[in-house]
Length: 213
View (spheres, helix red, strand yellow):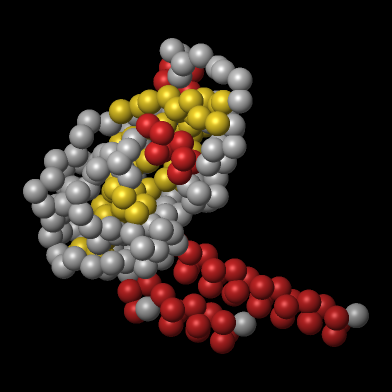
């Protein structure tokens, strides 16, 4: 198990213990419910929202690739967002909230648009990427499938790493590791290695249990 923990530390690198070693710009993905916003654990291509669901997107500058990133500011209110969209056969209604972040989050020379909420009427089998494409084109992806831009924002860049606390446009550009749009940089790596560590711990526990019988 200790070897697995060592591997986790090696993969995450020396900055793993410092939450503010670097910030990243990216579109974070959220799901709305009665209790507000929760970080979406599944990427947009793997998530198939039901009729009445709320998908939320927030452009952030954050050191965190998940649930501690800033949430969308508009409420996750399906009834209000889709009030004027009638149900239709073979289609579902999904509310989509787009929060373009703050001026501090924006890359140099860009200004975020006002947050907005729209109702998508899409085929029943549509995933969240298809829902988003129906209401917020143009979308831009990188070669690894990471969602880089929604409604054309930002014009360039994809998951850039910048110096922590540097604000808008500061720090070197670059490509952060990502899990094909599952919410932020290095989420897939951390989750995958974490799963290996947990499996290793479970194997050790099972072996000790057998020896004590």
